Image (tube, rainbow, N blue to C red):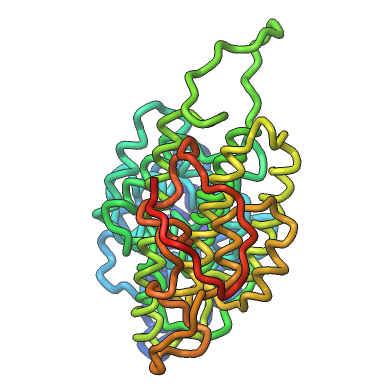
Length: 438
């Protein structure tokens, strides 16, 4: 590598960067002939950091991005593409990582704009094997470019749904990790929300693509993106009513409060309210699909795609938000949030996506405000399963209480204005009279 470095030092910055790519292509193509998973050693990484990430001005960087897009498009061997992409953009834990991440964001943004599918597929693999702290940086770069900076540019991002569903799945997972609704700044932009909801509503299996196409061990690595965005999407649906209620009215520079926006549900505008309702329905539908897929992969009862440990902070956040908001002024939002939580928990447990006991749920939800639907879910089945073939603890839909009290009514929680049932003391195992949904 030292001879190559001396040769590169005699070239201008852009030519040297192009030459590095050329040498990497030859190097890894040769390596792949002798080993299916070649190790990226220190030499190529040092060349990249010296000649690709540190010596280019803005114009040269733009030219290099075009060269990279064309290279990945024209390279016919996916294995070579993947290892070149990995060697270019895998974080090394050094000062070059900022330049590396900046260039990656621009490359993927360009690939979206000109529909370079090989780049998007490489980026999907990168998101799957890279720590989440870097994944959310890439997600933020794309959201800034297509949802914030230029009005209407989200239409370009929407088109990748058909071009690279695998990238879309990983992008959604990254975005839900980024926008966790912990503060007003971390509520997803409306354009982004609408795009993701429409993607999932059109094809709910989109968010299972990574899970369905990845060899999976029972123990998943910590600190990386989850196999599906389900946990993040549940967080969006459950926290949204409370997070939007908390969101303060924008103030003008003269100190006056901006004109009030017409509201449909507390602090949430009607468009957002309907989008979260639509998303909640799609999430429940995906959860109901999972039992078959987990069984096919011999993972039913062994792999929880929704980790109980991730439900704990979600419930704590709901409890904190409910306390923070005056219950007298946010009763509808609290009820809607808890209804959605109850529905998601029950369907996730019934499908095998969430592995926990009813005692775990009772302990977890004990501090939440009272909610009839949630009380039914944590109380468990109203009768024992007559189906001996079903695994112990399985909670099939036929064992849900009658519709009037069921934990998963025919229409998912979406309209806080609907009348609620009067409060009852619920006892596990007690039958309830039928009452149709009003």
